[in-house]
Amino acid sequence: MNFTNKVILLTVAASDIGTATAVRFSELSVKLAIVDIDDKGLKNTVVGDISKPEDLECVAKSTIKNFKQLNVLVNNVGIMEYGTIENTCLEHFLTLLLLPELLKTKGNIVNTSSICGMHSFPNTLAYNISKAVVDQFTRCVALELGERGVRCNCINPGVIYSNLQKRYLGEDGYKKFIK
Image (cartoon, rainbow, N blue to C red):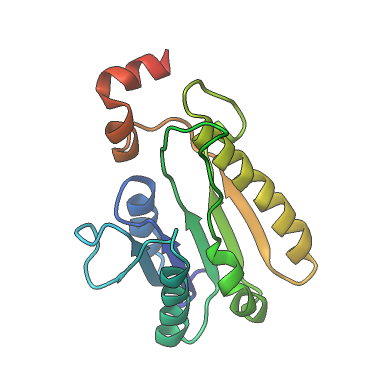
């Protein structure tokens, strides 16, 4: 696909996979909007917590206001939270807010999931479930929007020793997890 002058909104762009994705997109002559809760990791960008509906609305509106269109939405969200069935909750989706624009431009949606969406790992119930939901969400959206010209795909990276892993597992926990 030729990305020249396409408008891409990339969420959670201040570290790890998000940063690498932003760097790669910047090499492809795109108009890139990036967002992250980590305001130190981003400069001159939209800062927001995409788990908060009011921030989601701000991100959606400011992207369309600044670029006048949206061609690709990259839902790159990763949060490691220990939890069980008793204390895990659902999150809001930026996709819904940007759907009218994506339908107009016959755009693309790319969701970042994880190997944890396909394979279960101990002590990470909430994360495993969240990534399985992303996989199923992707399949459903692809079926619903494909006939209307909007593609929806998902990537499922393997385990990466990222800032997320460092925060929640530490080096010793990461080595145990890999075993």
